[in-house]
Image (cartoon, rainbow, N blue to C red):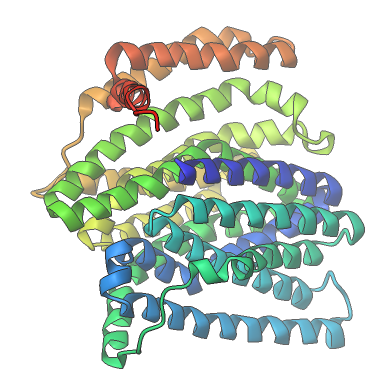
Length: 482
């Protein structure tokens, strides 16, 4: 539960921080910041994601004690890549100072993005190690320190030095320094290095992680291309509107999914270690139902309260375009969440990740075709439509691969049908409230939506949620007093 609490804290504070930075920088500078952040995410994915994914798949409390070369291989690979990225950031910074002499130049922004990518990679890796150990207290501490530093450094940079490059540097530093503070409890015991084992582990990480990197990089390239295309066609301010809508929408839909995945995938890995592959796949099947049962009403609920949310929370300079973009993006980001948290884990458990690349390639191709066709018909919103179409196509292909063939995953279809029915009933009841005064709409829609969907969960025990909650209460009630 500490892992879930930590991620909710992280997502909530990132949500607030994103709105604050957007307000302080303004649409144009925030558009440049968002474009650079998308580039930093791509760099982080290409350089570090294969190692983070390998940590979640191959590192565990048992491995920590019995196979120390796994951690040694991860650490050494991270060190090499970190030094290379740091050197690249230094060269870009020197070029920005001596050639462009501007904090807004391309080389300076590239240096800031490299620092942000470096901090991102180092933090995500150590957070993955803490989760793989099932050390909730350490993970919570790491996230809490990172968020405190990010709030101080990023908001301070946006206030005192309102230029995107300094906010990017602050973002990287906040994540890197959080790891420095907790470096000792994050470390493993020192043991002699077995170089043959290092070579074997790097080969294992490469075969497992590189296909996932290619897929994740494609999904990270999507926003980078789309924001770049929008900036080229309609200016940085329009890219800023698009970026804020995308960031808020993906957090609103994906936050809970990511929090669940942090725990559920590690449970599936542990099931494989203890009971074998079939037990792990059965756990993944249950995880799919749980993810759909919780994320589908979140996506639908966000669409319901979108007008009220825009009026009450979104900075005034972004209103109007925010709701237009977000409304189009909701289905796409729901599809992305389904891929990341429901479909991809089965291929990760099987260590067969090539289908993930094929789906990502299809999504990128559909998005590119949409960029060529849709803006002519729908204007700037066509770019958001292209993104949604690409993500939907990738999800459809991966779902087809998962649910057909000799090794198809057997899903709990009754739970999925009940989740869809409950969400549809909730939406039908709440749609008439969308046009109320924003304060009234939020005050009514949030509790009513939760109560309506909770009633369906209690009635049909969707994805075992009712049993899970009742079991937790029963367990708490029977804990003997000390």
